[in-house]
Length: 116
Image (cartoon, rainbow, N blue to C red; front, side, top):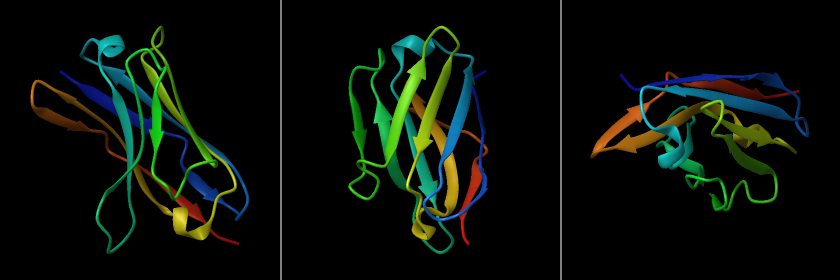
């Protein structure tokens, strides 16, 4: 079955960096676009970044453009989110997401906290 497992979250100071990883299994990874979402307490889940199947096209929420970078390694079935210049408002649970045959798949999430 489809599995998405995130890792790499943690506590970081404002201005710092983190790299999130998502290990994928159970589907044809290199034929599937991948996404990172986040959800802060009391807020709706929002799309942070997306990446095309071969990794040639990436899109970002305006709030993270220029600071975050999404990438993938199709040989390892991994997708990454490199986050730099982190701000307190980036604090959230970050989720890896994909959609296959009209079914949504989510990872369990990884907590990112940006605080001094």
